[in-house]
Each structure stands twice: as C-alpha cells, then as structure tokens.
Amino acid sequence: MQILRAESLRARNTLRLESRATALVEVSSPVQLTEALDWARAEGLPVVPLGTGSNVVLVGDLDALVVCHRGSDMELLSEQGEQVLLRVAAGHDWHALVQRTLEAGLYGLENLALIPGTAGAAPIQNIGAYGVELDRFVVAVHALETANGRAMTLTAGDCGFGYRDSVFKGELRDQLVITAVDLRLSRRPRPELGYPALRSELEQAGISEPRPEDVFRAVVDVRSRRLPDPAREPNVGSFFKNPVLKAAAVEALRRQHPDLPVYPQSGGRAKIPAAWLIDRAGWKGQRRGGVGVHPGHALVLVNYASDSGAELLALADEIVASVQARFGVALEPEPRIYGG
Ligand SMILES: Cc1cc2nc3c(=O)[nH]c(=O)nc-3n(C[C@H](O)[C@H](O)[C@H](O)COP(=O)(O)OP(=O)(O)OC[C@H]3O[C@@H](n4cnc5c(N)ncnc54)[C@H](O)[C@@H]3O)c2cc1C
Image 1 (cartoon, helix red, strand yellow):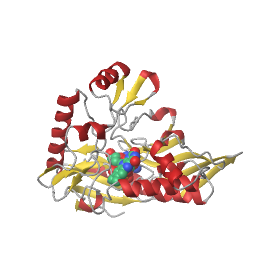
Image 2 (cartoon, protein in one colour):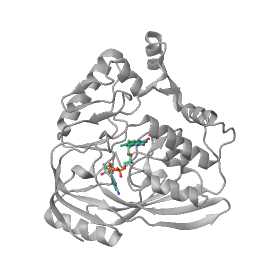
Image 3 (cartoon, helix red, strand yellow):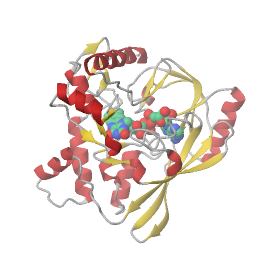
Image 4 (spheres, rainbow, N blue to C red):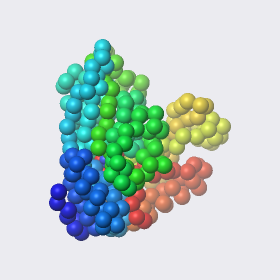
C-alpha cells in the first residue's frame, strides 16, 4: 500500500478541477482498505472515497486521505431459477459491468449503459437513466466503517434509496467506504421500454421487439449523441436534480407555462425537467469566465478553462437564483460538492 502525499486530483475528476489531497491511496482489497483506514486514524485525517470523480465538484484542496478502491472482481454468488445473485467489487467500472453481465446472458442493467463511474459509487446516488434506477437490482451493500474499520452489510431496505438519493448521502454520509455491491439480475430478458426517447430510438432503427442487447445499443447511441464527452468538455453529467413537486405546485406552474413537460410520480407528485427550466431562463450556451452551460444541454455545466471549482459553483448559484426568481422552483445540485 503506497500513500501518496500532496497528490493532485485534476486527472481524477471529470471536471478536471485542480485540488490537492493531503494523501491518497489506491487499495484493491478489504485488507488493504483496513490498513488505509488505520493509517488515516493515526494521522487524524478524514477519509474521502473517490471512484472516477464523475460526480464530484472539488473546491480547493482536500485535507483528507482520498481512498480509491480498485478491486474489480465479479463473483456469481447463487442462482435460483432465472434469478442470479452477483457480488461486484467497488472498483469495477460501471459500464464494463453492464457489458460483462449482458455478455454473460444476465439481464437488467442495459438501460444503465454508459453511465461513467464505479460500481461502489453507484448506490450513493442510486444511479438511474432511461426509466431504470439501480435500486431495483440491489440486494446488499458491503462496506467498512471509516471510524473503526468494522465491516457492515446493508440490505436494500437499509439503503433508503430514492430519486438520486440514498442513506449514503444522508445519515451515513462520510461514514462508510463501500467495498462491494450484491445485485440480482435475471436470465430472462424483460426490456424496460417506458422511456420515450429510448422507444423512438428503437423504432427508428426498425426494431419492434427489442432484446436487451438492442436496448443496450440504443442507450449507448442516444447517450453518445446527446451527452457531451467529459474527455473533451469536462463535466459531471446533470448538474441539477429534476425537481419533484406537489401536484398543486405543478398545476400552478402549468397555468403560466402550458408547455412545461410533467412526469407524474407516485404519491400525487410530479417531476419536472430542470433542463427545461434552465433553458427557459436563458442559460443554454452562457459562459462565465472559464466555465459555462453547454450550448446543447442546459443541465450540463462545462469547465472550459478553469482551475477553480469556486468559479463553477458561482455559475451554479447564479442559475439557481434565476430559476427561483422566474419559476419559484428551487434547484438542487446532483454532484457532491467538497469545499466551497
Ligand atoms: C457524462 C456524464 C453522464 C452521467 N450520467 C448519469 C446518469 O445518466 N445517471 C446517473 O445517475 N448519474 C450520471 N452521472 C453521474 C455519475 O456518473 C454517477 O454518479 C456515478 O455513480 C459516479 O461514480 P464515480 O465512481 O465517478 O463516483 P465519484 O464521483 O468518484 O464519487 C461520487 C460520490 O460517491 C462517493 N463514493 C465513491 N466511491 C465510493 C465508495 N466505494 N464508497 C463510499 N462512497 C463512495 C464519493 O465519496 C462521492 O461523494 C453522469 C456523469 C457524467 C460525467
């Protein structure tokens, strides 16, 4: 286990923001992770787990031991009828996992193709795309407590999953390093085609009865066309969550803005697209210094030429204030913000 001191995180976050970690370690097993946690305790440093940095905004330096879990095993734990239980180590690349399971004839994850990041980070915000969220597959999450290195296992019910939310963002925030995730997949294909953009992509390809492989390809094609590539235009995907509002609030908004898209949710609530609000507030393509709003995608903030997370946060604050003033809706950032 090699502890690196004063390590730059610029190449380790997809916004390419400069930030130095007091210390950084790469581990690939729970034993190494335990050693790293012991070391941090002895040094009096907090621990910050980091995957590929595709959902963090780093503002200034991180006075912490940054722990990157590199373990990438995938183990088949059990098989019962069509159901298969897998254990995936935290460092497994997410998209590679989607491909790997599909190739093994294990279905379910295809709508979540091409989401950047690691398997260990996936439960943090309950990743979701094209009508599917991670929580429908999670059976358990394994972790070590940062305070004492104790191993713990959370059942799916313990994880408090919600829309881009979980207990790991709430009461267990900063308390655990996830080491592995148990997922239940199926040998029986059940393509999830509820999402309109996905359906029309398949229709345009002339596929009327899609297999999971077709869904995977369609998701990869749509995402590659629509979303800016962080390697060329540094970003963290959607910068804001889609607001979920009470029906009465949505109706009031709809009276003023009849073309507002609305997606009904359970409990009489409805989700409205943050991208629509930001676009209507005139932000698409706007720049502030080295940062800006992507010209083709209002929900994506891009770091064109800035070192500073502070500049990006200032832009985010301006957008929040303008959407609040115009629509009376509060936008909430999706990525985790460190510092600032
Ligand atoms: C172009 C682009 C498109 C995206 N599209 C989507 C999308 O469609 N849907 C979606 O949900 N998200 C999307 N995202 C966001 C991002 O891909 C996910 O949130 C992903 O799960 C982050 O993984 P990561 O390994 O990069 O996590 P990081 O950014 O490294 O970490 C994110 C948070 O998780 C914590 N964390 C990471 N690993 C662990 C661990 N092992 N144990 C405990 N905590 C940990 C970190 O401390 C941090 O707080 C997108 C991002 C980009 C750049």
